[in-house]
Length: 194
Image 1 (cartoon, helix red, strand yellow):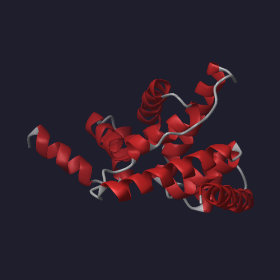
Image 2 (cartoon, rainbow, N blue to C red):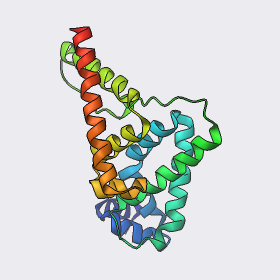
Image 3 (cartoon, helix red, strand yellow):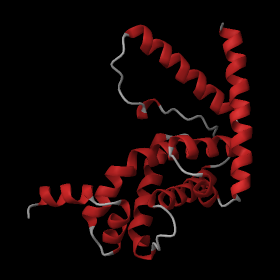
């Protein structure tokens, strides 16, 4: 079997199968896992550290941790949850090393899929995205992170609780407060702009 077919096969494996293969020392499986989850993990780290260059370094550290820890993955959670928990710990460490003088402001523009709409629709959607990003930046960091994990990464409440190391009830509370505040912030902006 040539390398190309092996690579295609790796991409057809489930996340758990890839982690098992990584645990056995299969570098192609690590590449496949990175191909599958790298962009989302990078976007998450950028949101946590506010700097793309630093985020890329953190992501390399995350993938090294995955390489080293895959053999110990018990499968008690989804692979996505495990990856995000590792990523969050590495991002927090990077933020602490960097110091408190940096302000968080996620710019997810690089992760938004290309659009084939006409110019008026694209301009309106861009304004809406800018408004949402600006409102998200005003949320308390714990609420913003909870929203991101649920809506951008698709985690369930218990999975978010696992990633953040908090009780599921706290996740529900943060999510409710975040959605309420986000709604208020967007309504205020709409009244101002309207």
